[in-house]
Image (cartoon, rainbow over all chains, first blue to last red; front, side):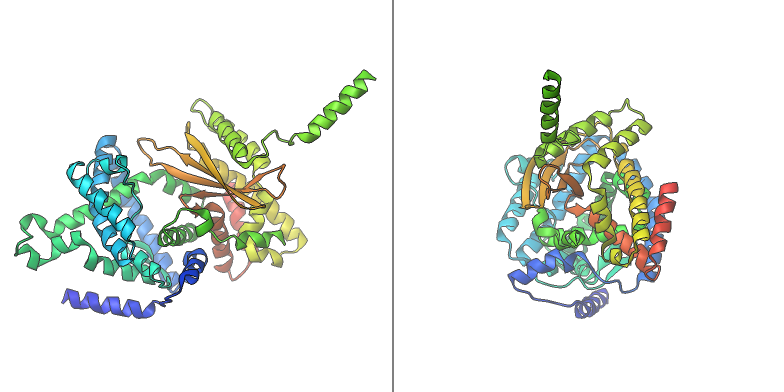
Length: 268
Length: 197
């Protein structure tokens, strides 16, 4: 029943997403301009949802993140590494779907080394061995890499900012995330691979820990943003869309991710 | 005669120097700013002192008028001269308050300037890294330096981990204007409120 619902949701969201299977040059144009902006579909609802999330953050997520921050640095570092190591399995699936075999090899090597020599990913010997972290991938990024337009921008309860494409990606992640599949798939649980230690709640512990680790690393940045924004909703929207464009382009180069034409107009 | 000769030499020498004493080489320019900021942001300095010194630095090294024009984007063409002057005045106060507020929370930052990328004759990107602490991860910071006048480079944007602060500000301004049915004076009111708080 749940699977059927998920399937229908994915299909309906896919239909809303404007797929533009652009050529190479087209993709570059997308990554520089339209990918870093998206029209609002239901701004009123999104702003209300944003307020709800913001209040929830103040009451729950920020205090939890502050508590986590009180842990000794090596424990936080090890926890963050272990979560990132598990998360790399989703990245690996998306590396393959994007046809990026070089990054897939790097992700697989990092996972193999960090899971064994790095003791279940707590340590990161792979980086010292030359296999540097090349960033996370998800199915929303894969859709972007395939040329899908971002569609509408909106805010989800608890999960925060997203676009139509990235919401499809969120659902798509379920199907291609090995950690989700191992912890949720009852056929596997009853068969050769699974056992009771792979139960569903472990997946949510892992995702929850990842969220707390991320929030704890960004306490000051978010406080600064709150203090210095004249429209926090618009600031976060801009940052979210810029970040997604950068990730889809798989680049940190300003030349590849920023559009210079905006700067040209001030000369006139 | 000797005195006049000295004055002429001094005058000619001063023409070859930039008015504020920063290098004209973008990488060196940013290195000098970072070094100066590090001295200001030591723990022993009061917040008021840090704010004052950082504001002075920003006035010398940031193209505040250029950033103001960029931030208001297409709406600039709708402003009359008085409104434009009012906007520029408000923007400068807003910018200095926002800029110094963001930085004064940093104590003894460790920033390495690592390289440059010339985009075109008007812009050079200077790359730097804010080194990790036990609480915060490493952060890549890129500085968009306006080099149209090669003797007097000015900062126009900070790009933090690939995210442009100027672009974020521009979209924020546009959002305020658009959510008030294009009434630009509402942006002025919002800026005034920010400056006053």
